[in-house]
Image (cartoon, rainbow, N blue to C red; front, side, top):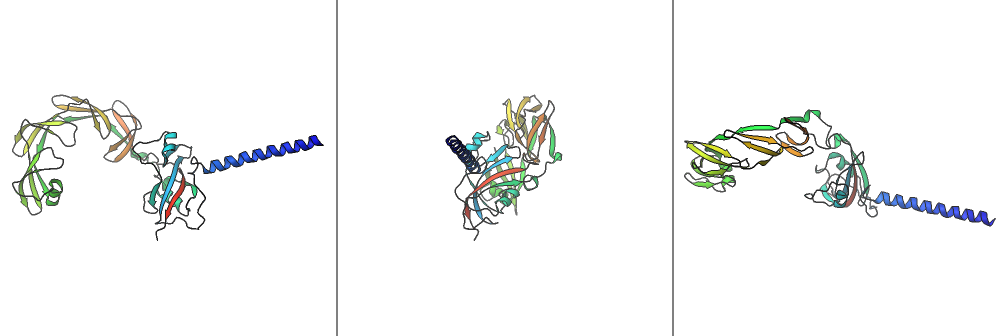
Length: 308
């Protein structure tokens, strides 16, 4: 009898331990930022998030395969290898409905209470859109430009633009210096709201040519036109499509792109990601990196200010 009683007691102890372990893991799992940012008890006042409210929210963003792509927590950003030293981490404060967040995330915040945590599922339609294969661009790796260029010296500007650039009212005969221009200008004439200016350049002088990474030397000035020779000294330059190697001849500047797969670059059609390249071309995907993806956000409301 004693043996049977001991057996029952042992079984009961084992069951209590198992139940305790299960409860412990359930509590730690549901409150961990791995699943949703941890917080205290949910507000029971009945006040919930509505359009126009200002909310502060911590979040962790995953793909359906579990890959973490974004978070407001710097510790988890480091843990999952997505830490960005240029990003300011911490709970973000937004006005719901203002468009600061993707539609699906904003929709998911509606109805939440202070201190509540929720997993928000965002479809591609409510996120970054469906993947569009027509947004793939192929660009040549090599670009050649003439080393010698002709530059018109006279420019007509609206008076308002003149004031914005030179920070003064236009007066005929004045010599003015722009905020970013490498040379001075003479105010040739002022007619109504139009101001004619002329660049003051001298043969033999070198200037930092706008929108290039190098200087240019004025070879000669012919009336309202100057002939300049571009003089790159660098072997590598930074372009909107990434680093490029330069090869300079007497007549040409050869710019050869040095792409990296996965690099974010700028094009005339917007930002894109380099997907592939060969000796002749670079393939760029202009779709958002999360286009076509279903997103899972574990969100926790840390602050709530009603719109009224």
